[in-house]
Structures are given as C-alpha cells and as structure tokens.
Length: 285
Image (spheres, rainbow, N blue to C red):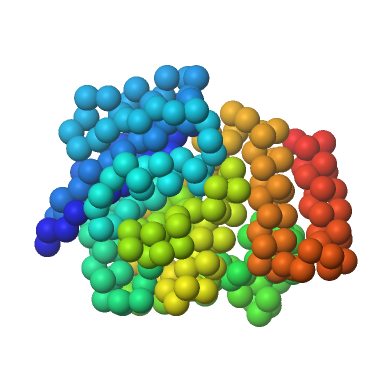
C-alpha cells in the first residue's frame, strides 16, 4: 500500500520523549510513504534538536503559539492528503498508521480516526469519549464517581474507549478522540478551517470533532491500532500554565457548544465552577 501521510508533531520542552517518538515513526508508518514535521513552540530544553538529521523528518521553529495553532502551522506546511497529529510523547507501534489509514478510507464520511492509547504500563487511556456536557466534571475520565461506578450509563457515555474494548472490532463511531494521536483527512480539516486557535492547550480535539460532525463528517475509534502515550511530558514542566489553560479551554468549549447563549445563567455557573476547580488543583499540587 502506498499513500502519502504527514505527521505533525508540536513540541514544547518534551525532554527525551521526542527522540523516543521519532524513533518509532519508521515502524509505525511501515508500508506507507510518509513525512514528519516537528513544529517547535520555542522549547528551551533543546529537545527539538532530536528532529535534526533524520530521514523524512523536518523541523520548524516558532514562538509558542499554543498546541492548536502549532498543529495548524504544521498542516499548512505539508501537502499530504492525510495528516497524523501526534504528541511528542506518543510512541507508535509497528504498522499502526497503515491500519488507521485503511480503516479511515473504508468510511467515506470519516474525517478523523483515533487508535487505542495505552499508558507505558499498559493501562488503557480513555482517548475516545462522549461530547463534554454539564455532567462531564462529575463523570469524566479522572473523577471519583467514574472510578466508583464505571458501569453507569453516564460514565460509559463519557468513557467510550472502555466500551469499545473488543480489539477485533475494526472501529466504531464516537463523539471525539484524543489529539494525542489522530489521523485526519486534510479535506475535512480544511472544511472547518482546522483547529480553533482560541484553545491554547487542551479541549481543541473535542471542539474539532464536534465541528466536523456539525459539518457532516464523523469521528471513529479503532481499538485494533495501538500507540503508547507517556502523558504530560511537556505540561509537567509548566504545571501552572497547564492548569490555567485546561480550565480556560474547558470554559471556551462550554460557552461555544454547551451554553452558547451569551446571557444564559449557566455560563456564570460554569465559569465559577471551573475557576474553583482550577484553584483547588493549584493548591493541591
């Protein structure tokens, strides 16, 4: 099989994780024509140098404009019909991109497909989920209620990856998949003008998949393709920034998709709860 795919990797102070990720590209893209572009958002740890002098890998340095804008820069700088958005701490397994591409092409209305994502110890990450809503803060990926009552319908809706644990199943439709690793059609990304750059960090993936669905496309999750993600290699070096932007982006999503009415009282409530949560996270770190 021969098809051109471009990997776009946005890097910010990822330490040695970027080098480990780049080492897996050749096997992950086995059977495909591919290229990779590392978009470095002004790293200060020298991690971006891992992209130098590697076959099929190019480096683009810029100011730190955030993840969403960094991905858009990478998309604009490449021309392949398919784009793999990949975190610098996300390692591909052999043949996984080819498997994702074959499944995506089986579904003509599929814009984005995501693989099963595992922690380094093999624990499943909840990388396929239901659209965030007013209950996500209570029944989301890391909440106590989700751990205590994993079989509740509201939990299973939010954590769709666990509900799609059959690896023999080619793929299933989901609301959204994690931007840590997603394969997308350039045509579909262009139709919605790429990632929304109001999201500096976090929630841009949920927003993208929702806008794609509104435009007539679908998102799929493929548990038969696997990557390994060492979560937070960049954000752990800037915990204050990561905490602030997580909650700021959560509110942007909430105000855009859940309570779009400007004067709806739910907006003020959402802002208050997210602000409180952000401060609690800050003092608990």
